[in-house]
Image 1 (cartoon, rainbow, N blue to C red):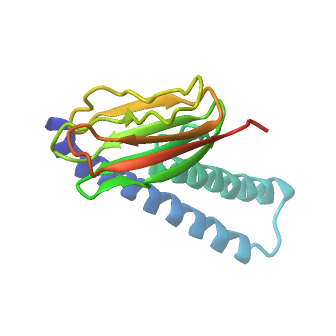
Image 2 (cartoon, rainbow, N blue to C red):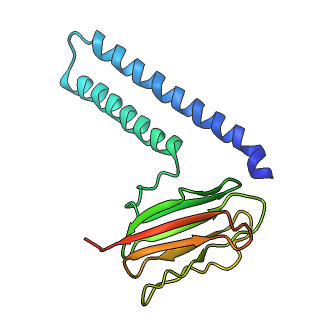
Image 3 (tube, rainbow, N blue to C red):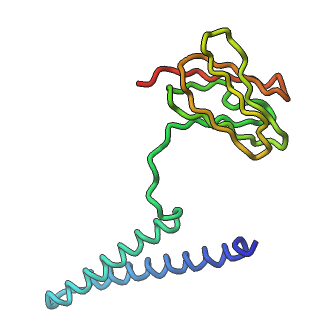
Length: 166
């Protein structure tokens, strides 16, 4: 709870730092525009100050936009939300080897339970109970069409279509 209470102070400090850096940049731009005659050393110092402020602004933008980490490559992962109205989306297509994640956004337990289709070697989905707020992952191993339902709420149905990997 203390971390949440500190959040406004942290954001305020970040905003003050950003405003300070912006003022620094405006000042440097103003100085540069007024330089008529000066030694190359003075001009170099002003350019260096302006460049430093620009780098600092860029670094601050990264900090304010998130964790500062370089985004990771997108994973081959598809999301199906379990809602009070059913699975969303109720039909999803993936390639062999891709991951599907079912995320339970309700306040009740649900399941992802495959319905037998009669296909030889069918890969039946079987999540077991997925608690409220939890998720379950499945990595597609074999191409085919896999219908499923929730055992607790049978009208909640969906289909995973697995296509061959490219």
